Image (cartoon, rainbow, N blue to C red; front, top):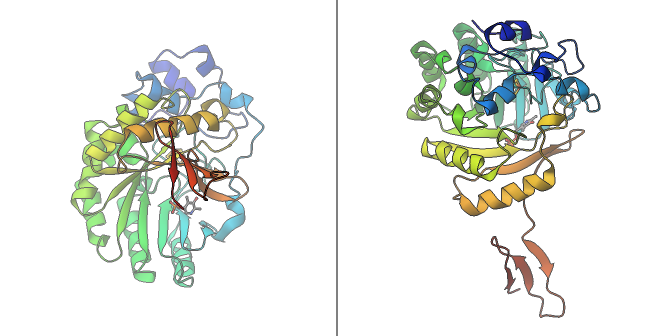
Length: 343
Ligand SMILES: *Cc1c(COP(=O)(O)O)cnc(C)c1O
Ligand code: SF4
């Protein structure tokens, strides 16, 4: 049984003062929910920190609940259309476990519930009437909290109304509820996988989340021809050191999961204690880039406030044109040296 209150958690394990002092009525609005799979991993501090709330959430009242202003970029009620060629469909507000760093706090666990067939059809028709849109993110919440029949219906609607659109299946379930991927569910995915490509978008933030069950859940998709990409969030006290990220990214790649993004934590209310300073983030990015192959390296990315969009964060290797020369460019090398590059 999933744990859905701090009291229930306190009855099965010892809580710290900081954890016990978390106020469920506080300003950050995200309920406690911990899946069985995550409950079995709570002895690992970097996992506990992602799912067990602390009083620090209540103290952070400064930021917005919706820094990306997604609510302002709605194509339909549940479709966020912020970029011309792709859109995000909020399938449901539910997740198997709520991450304390969740950036979609205005929505996750808000009781909006699953999208019904009309809402799904409306979104699919909106997409069909905007032929520039070539990719749709099925996100939330977590689409795999929907029942098998609901997922089947949703994929049928998207495949019939906008058949040429790439579907990104965005989920944290492989990490937090790998048992969800039953043979029955995988049969439904298989039924809809042909045609425009599907991609599985996972979220693993720490190497200890790569349990054998989690990895076999992802492998079932990859074996079926659905590539897997991972989006991590850079989190203070979880993965804000080079060694952890190098291990995470190498193991992801070894398991056929391409590290895609490493997100700077969004300035969402209640998450200040989990954010890493961008200067330190840039230093980490530079150091792990030296260690990792191009395939294993994620893009460190910030999603700018007020709907500004995503931007890549990386060290500025090109310093400009060398003064007093014949117009050569001057570069930093990854190891901190300098090179001139002919015009
Ligand atoms: C992040 C995001 C996307 C996808 O962006 P990519 O850079 O293509 O991964 C699409 N829509 C919204 C609203 C997003 O936030
Ligand atoms: S799984 Fe995603 S939407 Fe759900 S709480 Fe975690 S970050 Fe938020």
